[in-house]
Image (cartoon, rainbow, N blue to C red; front, side, top):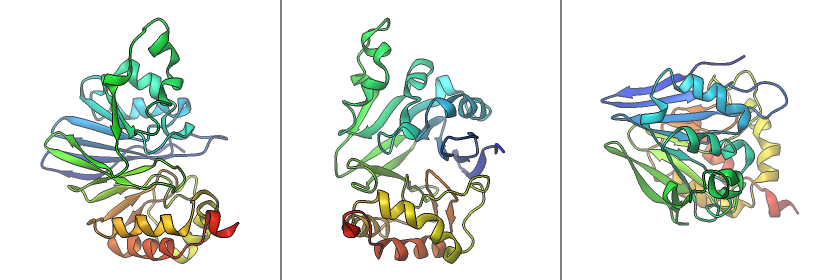
Length: 255
């Protein structure tokens, strides 16, 4: 069942919307985050073709997509992350923020845009992130790109909003909880089995997990939103997740 956008933060011209439950059927369900600061909007991991129409309809209830959407952020290159890119480039003036490792791959998704009837270059629509991250201006605030390399993708970033203290954590913290993704995690002991198999297979190694945890502990995070599954609200739940994740043996550790 589709869920409407949930407003997680709304103070002093800064708004954060959490969207989930927009896709039903065989496709992997995904979550989206939208941050608006003083009229400028950023959309995180907008998804693929299946997501575009319901997401754009729901988003248009809250912002003017054409005039307000400044950025589309892509944590990495997967189909459920960014294959709706042609639509966003066509119908908005947004720039695409992603790792510089994937900047040369994304034109494969928009061949008509770059080599067909439109014959345009993507270079002026791309913001390429260096490996050590960056600060991206949004309205009167900034979004911090936090390196998450080898945590499912060799060039991977998560995105932190210091105003709302929300961390959009991509596939880290992901779980399959269809129909309940709008409800935060209540019991970590029951939630860990829903995350464990995925994280053991898709995360490269414990060394990569620890490097990410060390970075996140330096941030003031009050909400963590993965791209799949339930969000983590409160420092207690986030701390429990970090403690589990930094000890996780995964990927090459298990070969």
